Image (cartoon, rainbow, N blue to C red):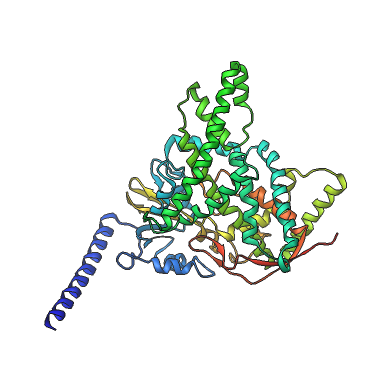
Length: 498
């Protein structure tokens, strides 16, 4: 009995000693660096439990708002095992996002780093990152791509919508249906893959791959990360084969053509992202030394993540918000019915500018993106001591720039929790991109596919509201680990009689 009591006493002494040591080290670190005010919470777990819990509420910014009221717009905390500085200040966020490479570099959880690899676009910096971003942005924003892809998006949307007529009791789960639309478009833009075995295999393996982004970083057989890495291997096998086949085609074209013809082929409009990256592989300085083929394949897989996760969720949430706002839905329907009537009367095909010129539709998309906060924050790590607006961010500390807090701040938006597309008539419409509005990130890593994303959502909304009326069941938004609908947003649809 005495031994047991003695053992318990030693355990208690150890716990108390560890607690004292933790707080002394915490105080020493704060005194040394002069970091922003805040609370690192409990040893090891920090304030992670509060952070996760807020993600399952209707107001996920409660975690940030509570600490902002105590410590100011920039504060320190400890979440997911990492002491970090959180910024809810749009001006500080702008500086962090723009000072990339020399001052701040990406910092992501270990599971993401393991899954994407060292050559990931998310982790590369400097000239290579800037060059790739410019190449991809130029292609994805090009009028040539938008003109070509508009018909593909229309076909994918119409095919999916037509299948709803045959659903049991006309019950549709919007979150599942929108993914059917976007994945097919995504692989078309990336690799020009149409319906078939490759598309089906990629979709199957991608669904397994994506589950490992937020998980315990353990690679033992049977673990979530292990399964996701195996799925990535299968995806890479398909993608690398396509890249290699396309490379051989370009080499044959080069071997059998004269220099002028070869230059014309290389300088014409690219068909897809594989084309864009392979041209960089071949053309730069007329030497085959630019981008390794495995780098191209790996990053094609990586580019599926934002394209497949953000756009279908934005479509889903647009339906959710419109279902809760009958006045906005009525105005959206009237605007799109007018365009449909014009097209029927003129017998003209739709163009991408037809969709993007629908002003209220663009306002609905802007407001959806503001409230959805699908990209809710980014993580960066300071390479040196940085002072921004009087806040010191010490070298080695991670910074979380919270977009959600900015989008839902009453200082930036009146009645921020109200779905109000009309606010954008005063702010500046769908093209606005300022410090207070960052649904696609910002700085040198601003999402290069933002124009294409808005086009996809525009086409989906147009054909949805001109084809169906619907009744949405009550459903809630979950914000952790990623934004999604709790019940996948079930709606009962009824075809519009014309």
